[in-house]
Length: 386
Image (cartoon, rainbow, N blue to C red; front, side, top):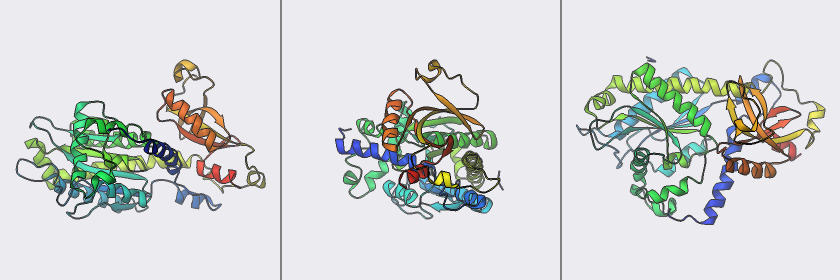
């Protein structure tokens, strides 16, 4: 049925370097052969890591009848993975845990990074000091803008206190200290837009297909999301402290509904992302590497900073782009994409990206063009190194 503490300068520099690295990892397609079918096979969402929150000695939240978050999260995670495996045979599903075992937050992110996942989904259950709150919410990595969002992150991050040597592993991060979360704001995910896209799809499915109250898409500094290097979300499937919602969460039918909703959101996300990626290539025939292209080197190659995407065309005037002048636009995946500036290599592009982010475009990222045609940053750097 498919129904700070003060953070040291070395860490700051390290985060800056990671920020550039994350940009490279988004275009995961490796164009190594010339046939369109092989290009098609390499593009898109091929690996998803599904993380069941808590586990083992970390029970998470506890309901009124003593049912634990770890058990509900595991059941929904396994059901979600089964839906994906049975209906999307080109996708590899990896679970951070398939039994009641304790997995450190650090290791959950490492599993996703090690397997070069295209999406990370962490499944949880919410809780509050009162029985009244109810509904679902999906979080992406970011600085909490409300006390409620910060409390949710602090509660989930407390799991590190059960880990050995957590002070050293998380560089003296204190999950109970609001000051510790300032450091996390220094790293802006290069995958924020993709994370938001999937999160919105999850909430839509929960609301429209499962009839759950929609608490919206939010940003909060969850450690498990902070350490992943791909689009990532943390899903709160409902409040275990609300008696009525608890009944739904612990029921087989309720868990199946929630899992199928996450699956449908994933299926739609996969389709949209792959459509955008594949539109950059001529899939009607062979990808032609002409002799002139092979000899371009630096000639005809330019890096730009993408600052915005819109379904409707926006006038290229400074007022529409926070005062930036000379903004350009190109089309891809039935969307208008806006870029600023030009650079000859990734070093210059990184400097330009930093300036654009300081100007207010926090999600700006590097794109590359060869003779006016969009190519992956990976391919652009390979051309530079010839």
